[in-house]
Length: 403
Ligand code: SF4
Image (tube, rainbow, N blue to C red; front, top):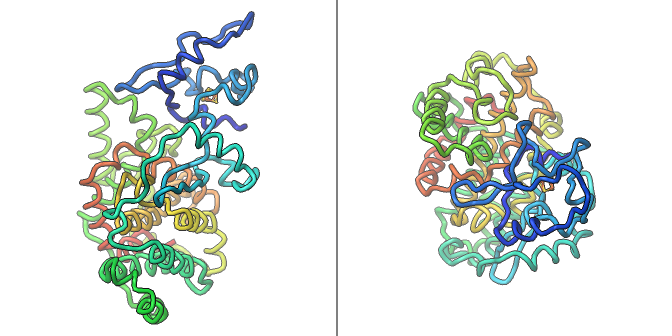
């Protein structure tokens, strides 16, 4: 009931919903929005007021349509939020809650399992594809997908690993698994023998993993990658040539290490990137080392983000632009340097050099709003950039100051 989703997001509605809402009988209620939707690039969205709020949001932050006609009369997008319901294996769907919702971030509200009836009603209205394709599964059988995901969970739960080393281990395992291939990974007896030594070797290798800075090109590529995760709602409006040119200029400045994330979306802190010193070695080295137990507190929410996605298989297929299992894993693990960078920006805006729990929450909220949803991320060419960043993963994390 915070109304943030009604203030921040561009809310889609179908033509049938537009007609249904137009036909609602408000009787004598004053100032009912008549012209409540706008068409942008062939899609319909609720109009927003100058302060960003949906035209149906009242001065108390409550949806007028909900108050007057009840939950069921609202558009599917409004009723479905903050659930993310996607098809996974053929004949199955998985459901999670999005972390761009502050209530979800705070772990408020009823568990998903207690809302099964409501979710089933939503599911009746949604259209699902036929599930993961063989190309997306890369030759893996279901048990192999489950087994590998459980190994990632083991690494996530390992109390001895700090956040950065946990992520290095997971990316390393993802890349080793891809090299082994789907057929090999689906061989139960062989993998039962291999997994224990594979995991212990990866953990033993972690302290030896490359820890030196990255070059200017990789820094620039990473800053561009950040811009993909800043562009969603405001991006919808950038249809004119003038605003597109301005946006291209903003991205170019960001790639060069200048600019300000606030120009991509009003929710980002207004601080010049130069002041954040993202890749400044001396600033990163002067930061106090955070004990692993404290790191776990700071990053608990992010570990939850990863754990839920791995459990629900919502990191490939429909959940991530139809991408395959391994590319989805790489994109998922790249969210760590991204959240680290965003959190550092929020910390700098508070005048602090160390990240706090609040900074990580802001960062996850921004990132999860775009992961698998940003229009800028859906192009296949982005996959090759993700691959390139993944090949410098350990250095990238080191260059960003680890945690
Ligand atoms: S219609 Fe209601 S629930 Fe949907 S965005 Fe507008 S105010 Fe929010």
